[in-house]
Length: 240
View 1: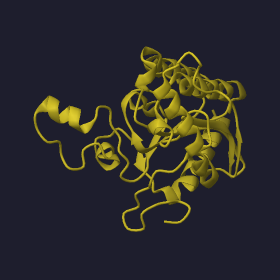
View 2: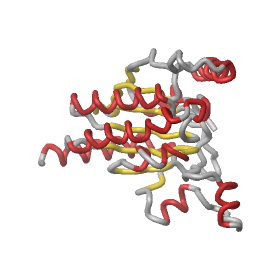
View 3: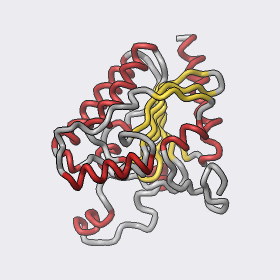
């Protein structure tokens, strides 16, 4: 599989940590807001235990790694969700980090590249986790109104509240091969419609066929593809 951790036969990209993805995608990456983490108000011992374990496994303090990267001499604000941090769930600190990223990008007139990999809103935080959907979406809209470029890469899995908000707000939406992309879980849907969904239901290829994403890009080609989109947007902006 190599450092990219992809299947040599089908191109499926196995789940990787946010730090590994930053390393294989960007030439340089300067992390920001590294100390933003779950507020102390959540004192549930089981939840705090999961947070502690996730921090140890991933090397980050929340389910998203944010920072300013460079790619082929192009400066970009980047967010990378980590599926090994409580399945990349969207908590209050996650939302805060992403909002700060977009605000910095808007102020400094930078494009944003976001890698999504999430099981959705973090239920341990209740309504505050769900509020992050609207909070982040507002920051994305402000960035868009400033005429700035936002590219999303849907990674395995991208589901729940993340899919229902900022994962689908990109100017360009890419996906890795065979990534799980959807909102509700397969079992919930089966029980609702009382029948089996198609075999490739909620896979990136099916989502592409239905027009919800722009392209599927193998992980081995992502760096080059993202760079090309950034350069294209840069040229368009300079002529705008």
